[in-house]
Amino acid sequence: MDIHIVVEGHHDLSGQIYRQLRAGILEGRLAGGTRLPSTRDLATQLGVSRKTTLDVFERLLAEGYLSARAGSGTFVAEGLERLPAASSAHAREVDSAREHAKPGARSAARAQPLWDEMPDILPLPRATVPSPLDFVGGAVDKSLFPFDVWRRCVNHALRAQARSPGTYREAGGEQELRLAISRYLAFNRAVSSNWDDVIVTQGAQNALDLIARITFRPGDVAAIEDPGYPPVHACFQAAGARVVPVPVDSEGLIVARLPDNARLVYVTPSHQFPLGMPMSLERRVELLEWAQKRGAVIIEDDYDCEYRFEGRPMEPLKSLDRAGLVAYVGTFSKTIFPELRMGYVVPPASLRGALLKARQIVDGHGCTLTQTALASFMLNGDFAKHLRRMHKTYAARRAMLLHHLQGDLARWFEPIVPTAGIHMAAHLKAPLSEAAVVAAARSEAVGIYGLAPFYLRAKPRAGLIFGYGSIAVEHVDASLAKLAEVLPRIAR
Image (cartoon, rainbow, N blue to C red; front, side, top):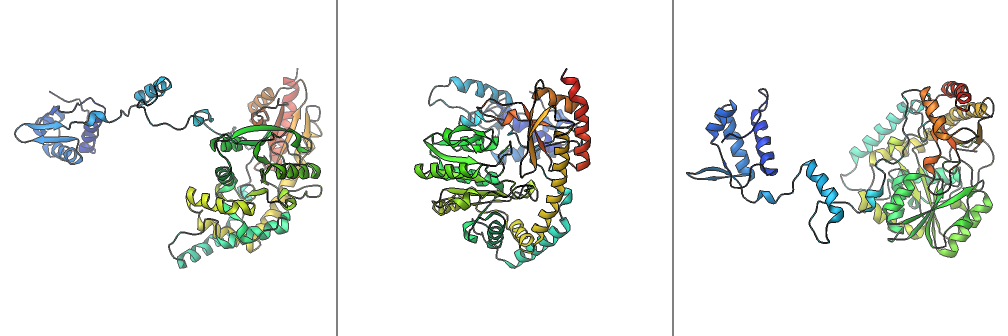
């Protein structure tokens, strides 16, 4: 009996035949015990040399898919029908059937049910229009980064690595970088720490994940700001916590609305995400008092505090903390670029040991080449120079954005003017709707983004978030001029 095998062209003939025979065996089309044609007959059927079919049979015999019986021929090996089917159709059948499966019944491998509830793609910053007129949030301007200086830092790190032994490193990160970060925080953020108080992470999200791992037991309550940062909700939910959104007002998180049994509170006090207002000093003290009475952990995410444009800086929660409650989280994603994947956490002393153990379990330690290069970049003063340059650039973009929002767009917007950061939120005035404004802008190749996706429970007020980290000042001007032309048409 002929076997259905299709050979195309003259390339990799034995590979083509091998893959099709193996697939037929694994999928059950060639049942165990089935006698195969001789290598001579199969070669004649397919129009190939007998050496080609001999090579295929020898490989399948060696791998255990076929068995040879002297004087009888070559047969499909027995027992392979027990292998799970690999077809996508079968996988879909398993997915639909497992909902009704009895306890203990065999089924395909699956993740914990909570992962089925996670969104397929977390709402991370991504440009949505093929245009430079895009206010995507969370992005920075890489074109202004001093890559020539960075290249020298990387070369220095390579030379250092060439002299070091090939061993695993400290889970907390390279000592030079931890020292550079501790000095930077002491000078710029009034956060006092020794170098070994700092734990280097793969961005702020990695720091949040590590804290969640060591803090939550299944069912513990985590309080987060509403509106807030969606990946934080997903991170805490994945750690088994029950996430409770807490509303914010003009002074930040409303402490009086915190659930009494919260094990952890996540806040962005320097620049509330996404609305932008800072948490008042009175509210900061109130939050610290609340946490001390309950033994709760506070995560202070200071994600873009470096860019302050007006007003006096507010003291971080970490610098006010006397009871060992605050885990201070920072990132280089907004000051350098997100692909660097570099962040840090300065935890309370009581959490430091557990965090180091968690870091060892997750990935051992980060990339020491990048850490050494970044340490040089900071300790040589190049990081400070870069921040000063970016501060001037972002200040100009922010000023242009405010010029329009408080000028020709004032009849449509109520901007929430932040003192810091590289994004600004603005509420829409009636009769405009968020979806209509976003759609109309995109029809003109202007990328703007609504506030609604950042709300969990609180009723969202229509508004937009303007990220100005990656849009040039002339494009801020051009895009908002276009928006001023579009809005009167959709408001009718």
